[in-house]
Image (cartoon, rainbow over all chains, first blue to last red; front, top):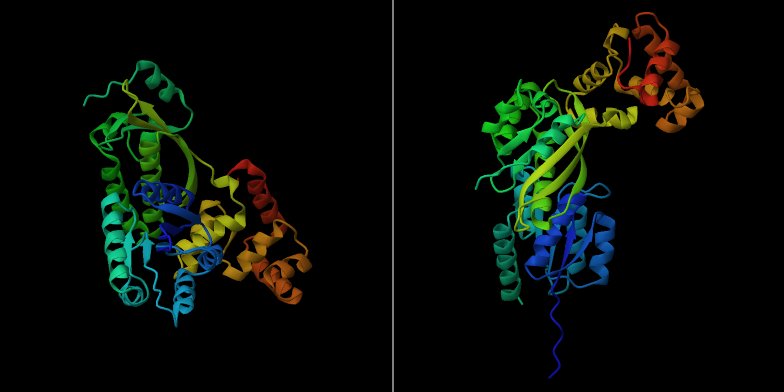
Length: 134
Length: 244
């Protein structure tokens, strides 16, 4: 029986070059393939082209808002069974209304600086939820 | 673990013309600093820093900056960038250059350039981290610099304008602070003072630009926009802060 290969790539959307380097290295050390971009528009192109197991999305992108990226991806998922785990990363604490919004649209949020343990545990939880819902 | 720094390294750091220090990569504790760095952080002597960690210093700064501006945003971003740069040097064993916006304890926004280098132990593991940094704020255009102030004080346009003009030592030229539109007109005029150019850049009518120019003149002590433009152009030519 031929089975589809499991996608193990993560899309990392982060506009700060240093943070992007460190997060990419952390994800690679956890065994994932990583595509990176500093732009929300580019992220949406990559999302259409490739299949990702998870997306790490930074809040406060410079070209389009992270909320637009998130809503576009969720919009594309409508009428499909796919709901890709999206983890929000942020420097600043989320406000109450932001927390409610991201609780609905995203799967988790992490405050920077990310530790390897918190990243690993959050990814594991998101991937497990994603697997259970299939 | 004891970290004994070579005397030659200490001499090198002391001789650097800009702020420099070394931290223990594991604990974040200061191992060495030159006078410029200590002064930049508000200490009289480098030895005062040796009791502290990088996190201690951030906590101290956070308190001062919260009292000063009430806005933790720039500081949080600065802290995160430094944290990630240190982590990168530690884990990748590579040096790194970065620039970061920094709010000085006197409330001015600076752009600082950092170079971070790993210092290796005998067993080739990174034991400590050498940083040297300098202020490159004058490499920003006036418009870029003003945007930083505006972003830093999003709810207080007057504070953004007064801090920006204070940084440039231009407050004494004004008897009344300009509005944001008047200031943007003035900054565009440092590139080209033709109303047609300013209007195109700001997306407004030429007559509106002429009106802003007129109002700017009325807010200056001597009414001379030309004189103010000369002073601003001295700044943009890279000669540092405006000279009165």
